View 1 (cartoon, rainbow, N blue to C red):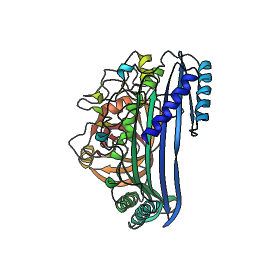
View 2 (view 1 turned 45 degrees about the vertical axis):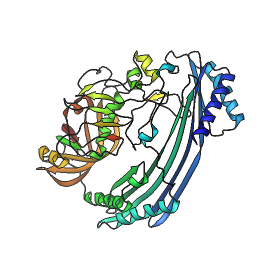
View 3 (view 1 turned 135 degrees about the horizontal axis):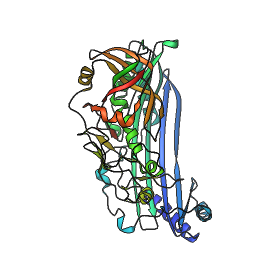
View 4 (view 1 turned 120 degrees about the horizontal axis):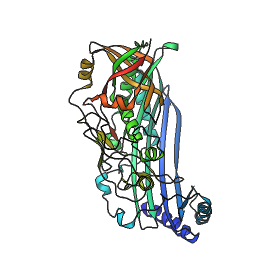
Length: 448
């Protein structure tokens, strides 16, 4: 597979050079995905997709253009190169574009250490269907569950190869296996729903499908009788399931593209305190069997571990070559790209410092407030950090869950909110973003 994709990228580069490109890079992706949905004990949908996509970026002077195709014939490759070159000649100039310096390219990497590809055979569609059926049956077996909205199982295998005229050529593969279920309790306007899902690189690491279904059912039943909470300023706990979303707003604001456009509420915060002292966010793109791991980025630079935030201080932006050049900095090797688009910066695996208390202990400290387990919609001003989101979860009184809540809104400013967080110790280590439950003091809550 790797040899085939390598041949395709080299053919694209050769064609680009013939078409007049001064520099070029190419990407080839071979992917297979299978998904099965079950509802009411019957197969509802089964999908399978497989194929090869190729993409070419042509650079002429300070101009560039990208083209892509799913036809890998020699004729199509030649036409792609001619079209990309013609488009590049008409594109606006951009001083930030350009391939990596050959001296900076990744030269060696250990794919075995990353362990991103499960050697087990692709599961049969019948096996996926059985997992989905077992997840649904387990959810329906939970007392109080009225129906299972969906139960699904899926598998994917993907190989990627990138090459460029600066001499870089490299590829890797990854696999994924997942099971999910969505359960409903109650009927009519009193219906409440919740879900559970698990995904792993190796099929053998995936939890039992029945356990996933049972968890979805249990969570749904716990939400029966939800009502609006009180209005006011209260402490809030973001459950581990959704806490990474709160930290994700910080990571998005630290993305070089947002900073470069001046549309980041952290644009002037480099070197400043953005989290409480003692808290750090560490990026490690080399964690074994984790979905965000990669040996090199989309521009051929070797990926490295780094601190995005250290002891509460913002240490740097997430950069590819283009954003780094515009900001007068050096790439952090965070470039990603697809067949039809140029590189752009994106974070990989991150882990946030965990605390020494459980979520339940944080609830005891909180006393009265809101435990959020799901969020709906978003109104976030990327420039100011003003934050407002719909939420549901559980009202907490005297440190204990009192009743489920829905139809409420939380609001605050992200810069202030993130400076008032206290982490729990419940982050799940198999996720790409390892973030524990987070207690935030004093958010505005709109309910009754």
